[in-house]
Amino acid sequence: APESIRSICCIGAGYVGGPTCAIIAHKCPEITVTVVDKNPIRIAQWNSDKLPIYEPGLQEIVMKCRGKNLFYSTNVEEGVVNADLIFISVNTPTKTYGAGKGRAADLTHVESCARIIAGCASGYKVVVEKSTVPVRAAASISEIFGANSPAASNFQVLSNPEFLAEGTAVADLLNPDRVLIGGSQTPAGLEAIALLTAVYSHWVAPERIVTMNTWSSELSKLVSNAFLAQRVSSINAVSAICEATGADISEVAEAVGRDSRIGSKFLQASVGFGGSCFQKDILNLVYVSECLNLPEVAQYWMQVIVMNDFQKSRFAKKIVSRLFNTISNKAIAVFGFAFKKNTGDTRESPAISVCAHLLEEGARLNIYDPKVETEQILSDLCHPGVCALPRERIENLVTTHADPHSAAANTHAIVVLTEWDEFKTLDYEKMIKSMLRPAWVFDGRKILDHERLMDLGFYTECIGHRYQRPQFYDHCNGHAPELLFSEKSKAFRAS
Ligand code: UDX
Ligand code: UDX
Ligand code: ADP
Image: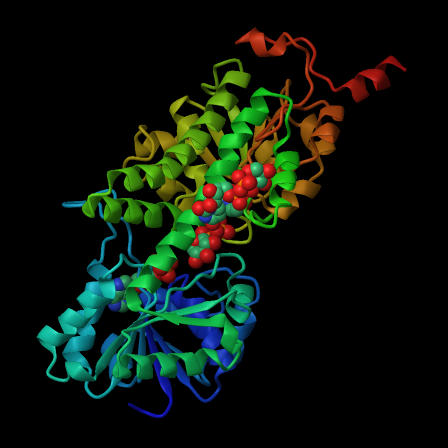
C-alpha cells in the first residue's frame, strides 16, 4: 500500500460523484482527482461554463480547481489505471425487471464498474463504493475482483456512503455530521480505511469520522434514509388529521420537535417526499427484509411509502374536489416541479404524480419552476406508467412558463408543489387580478401567508391546516360556495 493517496478516480459524474470530488479536490490540493463518466454529454457539461447540476456554491469551487487538480474525462479505463483510490459513484435505480422488480436495487452499473476495474487495474487499489447499495454489495464486488483479476489480492473494497442532500450538497460536504467508512476488520482492511480517513482528515474532525465493518456501513445508509423518510410520512399522516380538525401541523411539529429525544428537523409536512433516494432505499430495505424472511419488518417500512403515495393523491383529489369536481379544460398554474427547493432535480418529485393526476382529469397546466427545464418536465410526465394520457395529449395540455405571473394568468388555481423561497414574496395582489374567480391557492408546502391571501380574495387550501370558512363549505360537495372570505376581510368590507 502507498503511504498516502495521491490520485483519486471517481466513476460516475452525477449528483453524488460530481460535488463530492469537487470538495475533495478543493480541500486536498496535493491529490489529483479525475471524475470519469461513460456519458460524454455529462463530461462536456462538467468541462463547460454551465455545470450539469445546480448546487449553491459548487460552480465557484469547480472553476477554482478544474484544470489544476480536478479533471473530467470519458476515459474510464485511463482514470482507473492511474488512481490509487477509486470511488464507484454510479446510479443504482430500483430494478424494473426480473427478480425483485420494483423493489431491489439494480446493480448493473456497479457490477460493470467492478468488471472494468478488474479488467484494467494493476497494483494496489482502494475501491470505495459510494453509491447506496444493498447490504453485501461490497462482498460481491470483492468476488468479481477475485474471480477476474490476477492482482485482486491488492484490491481493498470499502463502503463510504454519502449523506449529502441536494440543494445543500456543498455545505453538507464541507461540514458533515459524520463521514462513515466501512471495511473488513483485517490488517489490510484497516490499512485501507486509514488511507481513506486521511483524505477526509484534510477538513473533517477525527471524531466525526466513524469506522465500522462493511455490512454495518452499508446498512446504516439505507436505515438513515428510511428514518428520514419515515419522519416525513409520520408528520404527513398527522397533517391529514390536522386538516380534518382544528389543529395546525406547524404547531404540532413545533411541540413535538421540542422533545430533545425527537428533535425539530425533518418535521415539515408536505405534499410528499421525493428525490432519488428515499423511495429507492426503502424499497431496497423492504426487499432485503423479504429475502431474509422478515415479512413484518418489510411491511413496517413499506407503510412509509404507502403513506407518501396517499399524501400525494390526497392533495391532488382535494384540488379536484374544491374546483367543483371538474377540472376538465380548466387552466391551473403549478408553482414548482423540482422535488425540493434549490435544486433542478425532479427525480421522484411529488409534482410528477400530482400533475399526472390533474392531467388525467383533463386540466391544462401552466408550470413554472425556476430551475427545471421544459424538456425535463415533459419527459417526466410522459414517462411510461406516470400518466394514462398519450404523449401528444400531455404536450397539448402542458405549457411551461418562464415567470410565475404569466403562469397564473387566466387560471382557476395556483398549486404550490415545491417550497422555493421566491414563492413567498410574489405579488399575489397583482396575480389574482389576472385570474378567474373564485381564485384558489393550494399550498402543498405550507409556505404562504394564507391570512393575507384570503384578504386579497383567494380561497385557499393548505397541507396540515384548515383555514376558517363557513360551515356549509365542507358539505357543499360540488356546489359553488357563495362566500369564502376571512373574518378580517369581512370586517374590512363592512366598515
Ligand atoms: C414515556 C415518554 O417518554 C414520556 O415522555 C411520556 O410522558 C410517558 O411515556 P415512560 O413510558 O415512562 O415515558 O418511559 P420511556 O423512557 O419513554 O420508555 C418507554 C419504553 O420504551 C420502555 O419500555 C423503554 O424500555 C422502551 N425504550 C425506550 C426502548 O426500548 N428503547 C429506547 O431507545 C427508549
Ligand atoms: C436525502 C437525505 O437527506 C440525504 O442524507 C441522502 O444522502 C440522500 O437523500 P435529498 O433526497 O437530496 O437527501 O433531500 P432531502 O432534503 O432529504 O429531502 C427529501 C424529500 O423529503 C424532499 O422531497 C423534501 O421536500 C421532503 N421533505 C424533507 C419534507 O417533505 N419534509 C421535511 O421535513 C424534509
Ligand atoms: P447519483 O445521484 O447516484 O450520483 P446520477 O444518475 O446522478 O446518480 O449519476 C450517476 C452517473 O454514473 C451517470 O452520469 C452515469 O452516466 C454514470 N455511470 C453509470 N454507469 C457507468 C459506468 N459503467 N461507467 C461510467 N459511468 C457510469
